[in-house]
Structures are given as structure tokens and as C-alpha cells.
Image (cartoon, rainbow, N blue to C red; front, side, top):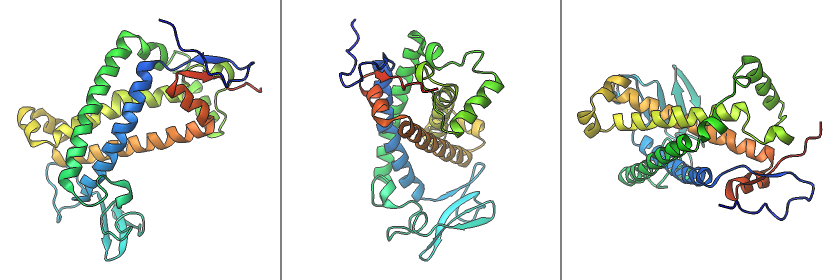
Length: 273
């Protein structure tokens, strides 16, 4: 099967490679849609009870490790005994007294049942896409060829060097940009093999029906409230990953990066060293 032609707008002396295969691109854009919908509908679900607990039980008068609320029109976030004013951002924003404002929730008005329908529907899309991508990664060896760290990359000195380079915004160029760098690999593997499965398991642990069928879920997470807390933390980790990912795309060149995720073709940044 012939690969598509490289983009015609690339400079004549540019090195253009076919870096992102079609299944990876499809999984990327499917995830982009499902994760955003799930995050936004999840925030609306959180609004129904904006407090998090550890253990099996949690209600208004129990000690919460995280609480988002308001004192009249003054919003706040409270954790570890510290109350942080967040008026206009969390707790009280855009004329509502909900934990998260309508701008970042689905639906944009308070509707718990609708938010749950959005959340559960796209959750199954996320699980199906993850499962199909995992099978593809194993069969095509994408997991070992593109995502697994080499022995040299896994050395602490090598990882530290890559961390310092990113901190200075010295992103890979030339041949070094042909493959994912070690920090990219660790981030992708962490989300693919850690955060997403943990989100699915904690989501199942919050379902009474699943708890009846698989009681070991509650044992694994020490109760439904602990599962809810871990689920929220995983969602936060995904949000941070997305923010970091978008920042790196902007720094590396958004047009080139987007073209790679749409057409598969990527122009290697010129090595000026």
C-alpha cells in the first residue's frame, strides 16, 4: 500500500517524513473529542456534590479533603485545612454558585442526569478506542518501536538531560525530532497504561451495579468515596497532560505538528547547532 505524498508547501530542502500512521491519528482525534466531553460532563457531575473524601462514606458533615464552595458570592477552594479565595473562577463565577462555572461544563446549565448520560456514553467510546489502539500497538509493534524507552533513554542521566533541555525550551531538532523524545514517551505511556485504565476502574467502582458484580473493585480502592477521589485526581492529571501537550505543540510549531496529526507527514525542524 502506497503512502500519501508529502505536503507540497514544504521547502525544497526540507526533510519530510511520514511520522504518524493512520491508526494513531484516528485514535488521537477520537481521544481528543471523548476526553474533552468527559472532562466537561465530569465537572458538571462534580457540581452535584463538590466535596471529595477518602474511604467508603462521605456526606455534607463528614471531613472532606477537597471542597469547592462559596460564602455567599465569595468562592473558595478548601484543602488540607487551607481555604483559598477563588471568586470569579471556582465556587462562584459567571453569576452561578456552582463549583465549576458553565463555561467549562456539559451541559452549561445544572443538569446532573444529562451530564451523566454524556459522560457514560463517551466513556464507552473511550474504552473501545483504548482497547482497539492497544491491540493495534501490540500487533504493529508500535508500542515497542515508537513508545518504549531504549536502554540509553532510560538512564537517569539521560532523562535528567532531557528534562533540563525542555525546561530551557530546547526542543529536539533535526534527526532528534524524527522520533518521540523520552519525556514524550513517558507521558504517553503514563496516560495509556496508567491514568486511563485507572480512570476506567475507578469509574466502574462508583457504579452500584458493577460493585455488586465485582465487589473486589471497592476492596481495591478502599471504598466508593476513595474511588471518586482517585477518579477526580486522574481527571486532573489528564487535564494537565492536555495543557502540557498543547503548550509543546505551540512551541514546536503548531502548523507542522497539526499537519503530522492530520496527514501523517512531518517536516523535521532544521538543526541550527
